[in-house]
Structures are given as C-alpha cells and as structure tokens.
Length: 202
Length: 158
Image (cartoon, rainbow over all chains, first blue to last red; front, top):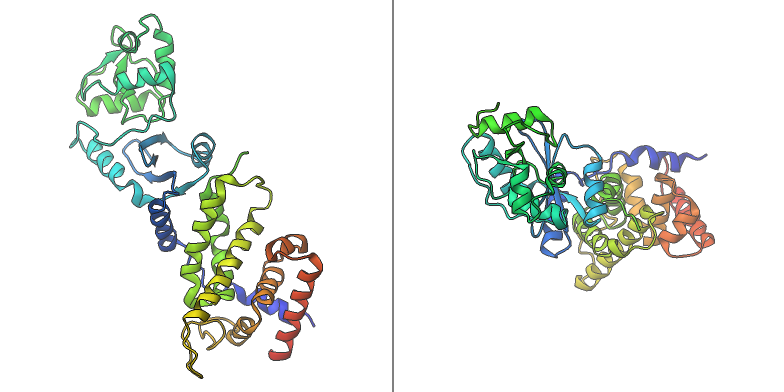
C-alpha cells in the first residue's frame, strides 16, 4: 500500500538538478559582488602536473602542487570558511601561469595576499619575491636581506613553507656554492623551473 | 568552531536543494530561489555556532526562500481571474518528469505539506531534523507529512 512514497522516491531522480556548473558559477559571481566570497579556488594544469590556486579579494594567497581534498579544508581553517570553487575568479592567475610556463612571461603582475605567512618567514618570502627571472640567490642572502643574517636555517624553513611557490620564486634560492638545496614540490620541479628560466643547474 | 569549506556544502547538497526548490517553489522560480538560498546561507555561515546539522539548516533557508517567492509572486499577480501563470507552482504537469501528474499534485499541496512530504518521503529526513527544518514541533511535522500524503493518495492513482 505504500505505493505513493515509493513512487515519489523513484521518480524524484527525474527532477532536474540544475545546480551544476552554470548555477554555481553565477552563485560565485554574486557572492563576490556581495562581498561574501572570501576565498575562491580552482585547478590549473601545468607542465609540473595539476596545481590548485586560491585567491582572496586581496590577491593570490595559495598555490599547491598535487592538491588533494585537504586543499579547500586548509583554506577554510586558516583563512575563512567562505570558500568556493570558481574557475572564472582565477582566470587572470591561470593566464599568467600559462604564459610563464610557455616561457612568455618573466614577471608576475598578480597581487599577492601574504595572509598565510607571518613574521620572519614573511620577510624572507618577500625578499625572495624580488629575485628576478633567471637569477638566483642563496639562503644566506635572503636571510640577510630579511634582517637576520645568521638565521640561514630559518630562512630555509621559510622557503620550505612558501604558500605560493612558482609565483613567489623560492626555486631561485640555492645553497651557497650552487647546490640545489631543497624544494617544497620536490627537486625535479625546482630543476625544471630553473631550466625553464635558463639557469644552468649544477 | 571549525566549519567545512562552504564549497563542501554546495557539493553535498546543491542537487537536493535544487530539486527541493523545483518541488516547493516551482520550476520557474527554482533558479532564483537557489541563488537566494545559497547567498543567504553564505552570509550567515561564518556566524554559525553549530555545524552538526548543516543540511537541516540549508533546507530551512531554502524553504523560507520558496515561501518568499510565493508571497512576492502573489503580490505581483494582478487579480484577474483565470490567467494561467507560466512556471508557477502547480499548474501544468512537466512532461519530461517521471510521474508528472503526481509531481503536479505535490505542487498543489500547501507549502508546508509540500516541503514535509518531499523531505520525509523522498529524502528520508528524520522527524527531529524535519521539525527543525519546518520550524515546528515533531508532532506537527508528522501531521504535515501525514496530511500531505493523504491528499496525494486522494488525488493520484497509479
């Protein structure tokens, strides 16, 4: 006799679920207009594999290699729970990254949001951001420019925690003497980026 | 308090919220109600003090947006008799649906019964959650489901 509930359940699947892509994109645009979209993120393809990027109204805040499900969780925990996937909000980021990987861009014009960094680490990363395309610095140099010449190891840790690799070019920082040192995304990626920029890697 | 990224709510619930709005607000209003629902949710989200029943919270917002849409359509409507309203709740059955007459009958139910029947019979939402969603007692929620199903049985034969 329970007929009608069963029929409702069975046929509910044929109701339209128009919520995919288009409606979600409109929602993100509207949320941004209303000042509610604190963090937008999207995937970007690159020669280094899939990347995920995130922006706030202030600028690019995060870039991750091989991102997983925890990418958005981290943004929600550290920045704001108002996080939406919105490829359109990251078009400019994607465009500049594409140009960079094609060798057609030497400098990023994207504004940077430094919110995920603080203190000495932020200073180190900001100094690193000033190393130009195709040039390299050393851990000792960025430590000195960040105001603590003896904090070489801490400078290395700061670079290892870089929330925006590639755009904040921590790959341009090497050991004194030219050894590669470490890299957040693995040394093959560091070598790839340096070669792309025409740096001869030891 | 630790809240999941808002996108996770959208990924988990946007289809069922959209369908709920198609049923409760009508196909012609569903898109707008969907936007209004999620914008309202996003506005309130960081101030939430509990994260244990986000689905009922979302459905409650959706139910209120569907009710608002009905009210504003009623205000807009010119009181002329027998002008069929396109895309209104009720009205023409949607041919592309399975059981279009049944869904048309659902849309003829009073708004609260419509929401109650959909959430209980289709989504299987438990009564305590349903009471929260409908903003009434559990007994009243049970009655709404019961009355709604009774009416559907009267008006629809398989």
